Length: 371
Image (cartoon, rainbow, N blue to C red; front, top):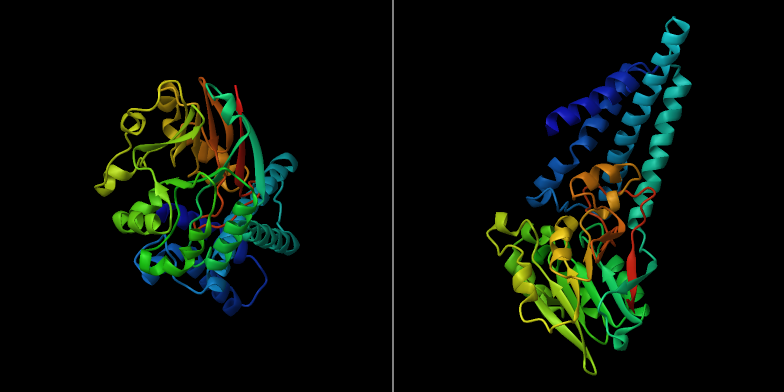
C-alpha cells in the first residue's frame, strides 16, 4: 500500500507537473532525483537509527526533509486541483485546455510556502491554552484546581534539549497544581535521547508530575524508558492511580498503559486495575494516551479523560481522516456520556512528519470547577 501511495505521488509530481515544464532534460532529471530522495525520508531515517521514528540526522537536515515532504504532498494536491479544473473547463468549452508554465510555477511556489509555514508552526514552543472543565463529583475544596497537560513531546533530534527546556520554562510558569504528561515522550532510545530529555527533570508542581506511557515509548525498549522517566522525577501510572487530598476531600489521578502494549509483550491497559480501591465518591481524572477507549472510561464513572496521540490531525482537513482511526475523537473537548474527554493537539510532533497548518500545538492548563 505504501509503495502504491508513493508511486502515485511521484507520478503526479514528476510526470504531470515537472516533465511538461520547459526546462533542460538534465535539470528535470536533477529535480526528479531530489523528489525521489526526499520522498524516501522514512527509509533514510531507518538507515540512520534502525527506526523510522528516530531520524538521527543534523537538525537542519531533518527540517529540510520535512519541508521537502510537505512540498511534495501539497504540490500533489494542488496539481490534482489544477488538472481537475482544466478538465472541467475543457468539458464545458469542449476543447483542449493547456496548463501553462506560469500556473505550474505558481502551484509549486504555493506548495513550498505552505510547507515552510507548516514546519515553522510545528517547531514553535506552544502557548498555554486555558480550558475550564466542570467536574462531576469534584469537592468544592478542589474548585479552581489547576492541572497542566503536556502530550506528544516526541523529544528527538528535531525537538531537542533547547526546545524541551523552553517547554519546561513555560509549563512551570503556568502555576499549575499538578503537571501531567499523556505519553509519547520520545523518539529514540535512552542512549540517543539522554541529553535531549534531561531538561524535563526540571518540571515542577506542588502535587508533582505524573504521566501515562504513549505508544512510542514501546518502540524503544519500554522498560528502559520507564526506569529513566522515573529517575527524572515522573510518577508513571501504569494501570495505577494516585490520590490528591485537600482536607477530607480526594481527587484521583489514574493512568493506563497504551493500547499498543500487548503487541510489544507488555502489560495491556487495565482500567479496572487502575481504579481499584479508589476512594468512594472521589472524582477521577484518567490519563490515557489514545482517546479511542473513552466510552469505556465514561461507563466506569471517570469524570475527565486527558488524551493525545492524534496531534489534532496536524493539518486542517486531515483531522477528519485521523478522527476515523480514533473512534471519532481527534482534537479538543468532547462530552462522552457524563465524562469530559479532552484530546490535546500535542506539544511536539513526530519528526517524520512535522507540519502544522490550522492545528496549533498546545500546552493545556485546565481549571477544574465543582460541577
